[in-house]
Image (cartoon, rainbow, N blue to C red; front, side):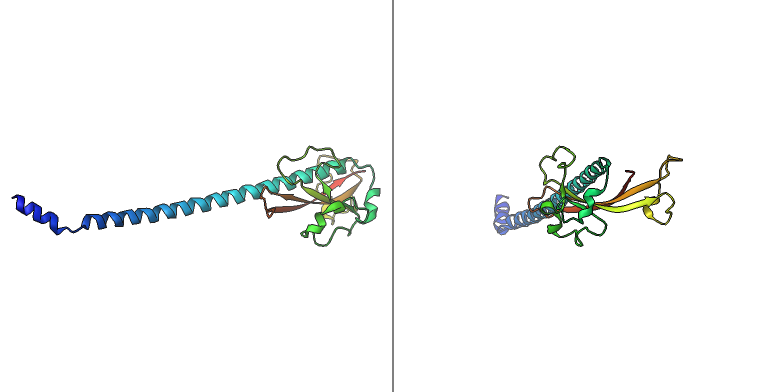
Length: 191
């Protein structure tokens, strides 16, 4: 009886080792694939977070520009067509390519908080914005898109509104600065 058992053990010649190695290989491939998938997911989540940060930064710049516009008493500062280096442009004076880095350099644009006293955004490149005076819009100018909603909540006293175009740029926390968001809005104020 013992002789048959001993003979069976000698005939296997490492078959269990080969099966174990194949199972180990399959588990290794599954582990590496899972690691690559989770790494890709982490990169995608990081990029989405960075894009959202850039968007929120640009939104903050729009709110800062609205605050600056609300503090205006005249549009005299907009007469320089941007040549005065104050980030305030007369109609048609905004740089033609707002996607170029030169449009946001130096005094071509305003830095978030510089004119309004808003606190700096922690850990970010401060957003910047341009304001363009678009002239006046009368309550009777129905064809002008700036007229939409001028009488909302009011029955009298709207009169003439000064229209402004604000273009804001925010950047994410990406070290390379590759995540940027540019937003544009139109804003009206009676002066």
